[in-house]
Amino acid sequence: MSTTVETVTGEGRVAEQRPPFATAGVAAVVVVAAAGLLASIGRYGFFGDELYFVAAGRRLTVSYADQGPLLPTLARLMDLLAPNSLVAQRLPAVLVTLAAIALSAAIARELGGSRTAQVLTAVGYAVSPFLLPQGTQLSTNAIDTALWVLIGWLLVRWVRTRRDDLLLWAGVVTAVDMQVKWLVPFLWLAIALGVLLFGPRELLRRPALWWGAAIVAITMLPSLFWQARHGWPQLGMGAQVAAEQEMIGGRLTFVPLALLVAGGLGLALVVCGFLGVFRLESLRPYRFLAVVPVVLLVVFAATDARPYYLVGAYPMVMAAGAVWWTRRPARWRTIVAGVVALASAATVVVSLPLKPDSAIEPAADEEQAALAMSVYAKFGWPELAAATATAYRSLPEPERAHAVVIADSYWQASALDFYRTGNALPEVFSPNRGFGYFGTPPDSATTVVWVGGDGAEPRRQCAAVSPLGRADARLGFPGITRDVTIWRCADPVQPWSRAWPNMLRLG
Image 1 (cartoon, rainbow, N blue to C red):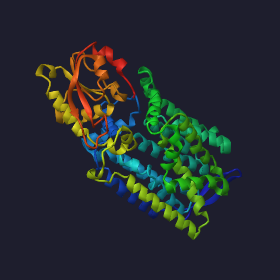
Image 2 (image 1 turned 180 degrees about the vertical axis):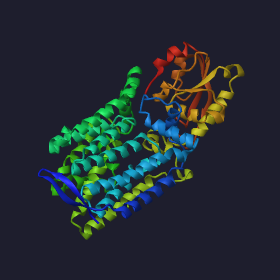
Image 3 (image 1 turned 135 degrees about the vertical axis):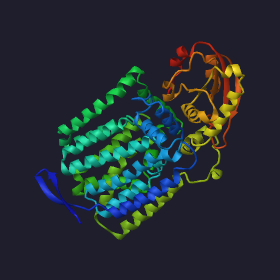
Image 4 (image 1 turned 45 degrees about the horizontal axis):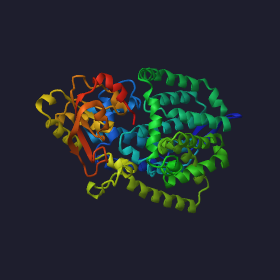
């Protein structure tokens, strides 16, 4: 049955029929998506960033050099509930991804979409080769995307109902998202530009919106104080991301990749969404939605950001596209949507980490590994820890008593920290990324087992440097877990407490 609600229009409040929620259809999509995610999350090993989240979670603070505290807090919680469990670490990503699928359908309902439109939106989300597979591992983007979808639902619902408590909740969600990464202000900037162009401009005059902004500002104070004390390292991440993007084509590939991550059906629905908000009378109050992904595309392309940063804005427009596509039912439309959905689903199956280890070929070089990072960055961590332990034990006993481990990469350091107890390793440090802020090697460390790199940094820091061991995993990431030299770095040229601040680097 339809639900009677009151919607504010320029002429006052009028009653309208809101379509019922497509509970069974959306639930079916969520169940199938859950089956795919749950079949995937136990495969391979920890992704490098997941190990870093665990390491950061064991050193909880109000902020980090490269992220907010929410992901480390989640990692710590799961680590306490199920120590060292790969599946447990990934469950939060699975849950928020499934919730985002249902929320995308709820946005279609708020836009007046039928059951068919709601299910089509949910399917569009579930068959994206990025939106669904990102739920197979804990990542900042998996959480950030889901929170963007929630903000989209609250905003669309406010446009329909003018209930100001929704804007306050949108502020609360934004405050939570700022504890993940600092991208959501770009979403609000795009929304503001869209509202200024097409309305409803009343949104920007609502006190509840600015009370929500005040909540964001207040909750950010501890993080901002931490960043100020440490020289604002999180702002420096933009240059590092830009450098990493250059490895996969930079701005030349940004737009194609940003569109491809939506998937076949998702991209088709986004295009339909652009048409729908201008051609369908009931969607005209939501024309600002068409501006949001365009602004984000331009801003992120201009700043050399990662192409998937804007995917959280897609579901709002996809929902509008599904409403427009299904408003005039026709058999040919159903057939087209079904064919595109099946083709997209096949792409998702390929994107999920379901292939057995034996069927994966080693990366030819670092560039190929970077393009398939979600695969190769999950292999070789136990082998790296074992090789480091062997190198450490090869040191003479007097040296071992005053030795520590320094890893060239924060991924390597996080893995060695994770496997430290089982391999009887000494304390682990790294000057790379956020790990560099976890602590400084003691000045009493006269010998270092230096993991990774070409030896240039150890030679700058120590008077005596020589190869001590080697780590090499068949499917490892070149330079990280494959073809890795382990160095003996002895007789530091200056105390670590003095050298460390100059060694810190985000790249």
